[in-house]
Length: 190
Length: 190
Image (cartoon, rainbow over all chains, first blue to last red; front, top):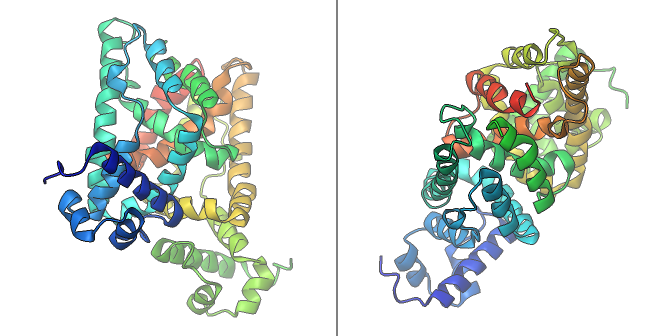
């Protein structure tokens, strides 16, 4: 796909509009027509650049991720986790939470969206997290055979989704930081 | 509310039909008309017995919960958790997971449904879990000041929701049992 014709600014503006629409109407009601109208672009351009609605949505979500885990290397696992938390933004987490809720059902009903999300969001995120965890194993902080190593994504993503249901509050930095210290690190033997 | 006019069998049949409809069409598209038609009852009866759609849905979900945590008391925290897991049913978990996905967005958009769910499902479940955890503290298995004590619901509910997103598989007994041993118990110092 020839993505070169859009400037990074234009691309980012377009992704922002897609996410705004997602939060407003949800995935099922989001149409390429609405994206074209909101962004003053043609549907032909959208399809040429992104191929399909699931891919456009997945790329918009991916562009939305602020923290790049692979850049984090503080020398200790606790330091790396707390740096991840510090790099996130409370307001951004609230918005991400609204997106996740809107997508939970759509993901299940749309295999193409699910695949695009996995390839563009879940897997790169896992790779970054794996890198942080592997360094901790190499430093000898965590035992390579610890069964919690492969469950860290479940702990983190789970806390994110479960908190609004249980506490009626979205996740914020303070909660995430306490959760890392009370749950994630002890499960890893730290 | 006079709920006495329905036999327990009739009530249970009605709740089953509500849950089937929820899985099929989702919360927003579920109407009292559809419930009345599916169960051969009158809308007047439904409203007299349950007051509102959110309450009917919340009660149907509550009736669906198979395990009563307050009945579990094996003498050790690990025993209690593994007994909880043993009392659940893989097929039931798959169905529950479909319900949760269908409700995630509706819960946020419908404060009345959210309140009904909290009162009828989340809070009683918490009470059962609290009882299990309090016994472990009284036995001296877990330190009363352990910060993970109040995060156990987040760990368990989170794993349930996060697994399909991460592994493309619903939660089953084997996963939940491994998760309890690798995450929940170590975070509690066991």
